[in-house]
Image (tube, rainbow, N blue to C red; front, side, top):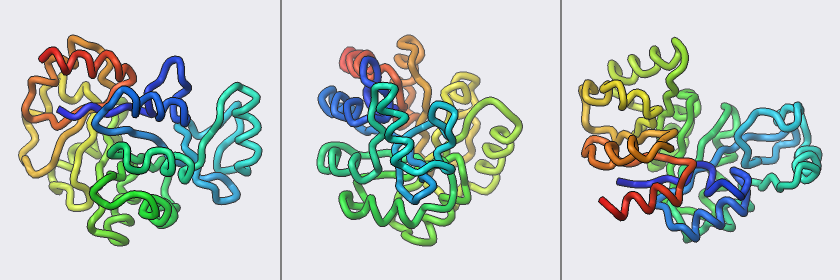
Amino acid sequence: MLITAHRGAQNPAVENTLDAFLKAVELGPDQIEFDVRRSKDGVLAVIHNNNLAGVKIQESDFAQLKNLAESQGFHVPTLEETLRLLAGKNFLEIELKETGYEQQVLDTVLKFFRPKDFRIISFNQASLKTIRKINFNIELGLVIGRSNFEDYKKLALAVLRRGKDYDVLNLHYRWWRCGLVNLLPFRSKKVFLWAVDDESTAKKIMRDEKIAGFSTNRLAAMLTLKKTL
């Protein structure tokens, strides 16, 4: 069972920061996940939300975003900063939040990591298709949420089409909780879960051989739990 540090090791560190990634490396997860967006001036930034203090990432220069973050007491790292920090330390799961900068991300990541040392994931299947065309050797993961019709539609299509454009399904853990994973008609895809922060739920997932791993915001607790099983 692979344990992924979701946006690094948070609390007290701010998510998706170099401090959070350093703390994660110290704790020793199997994978570290983070998000990538692109600023107006073309800088790849590691940040989850599409805005910072009400300012949209894609409509702002990186210098402005950096100043906004520092006024709130944290640093927004660039993708390159993050890769330099983590090179040779952990397998990475890199989530693209929008389409349009896939080539730039791949060019940057491949300067520091071999294809076997990272995975690109996204809610946007178009991004995964683009990356597959650019480099067939990159492992790709389709992320599926749990909250709206599009999520249900995406999962249905994933099942029917058997996912030629990705290798891994990243499902919100509630799909597992309702038993849907047992109904998936194919076993060629690895299944990961996300948003697993409850220890009793995590214990059950760790005993499920159909699940390859999960991401968590409570890294230390989950690594400790894993050692007890």
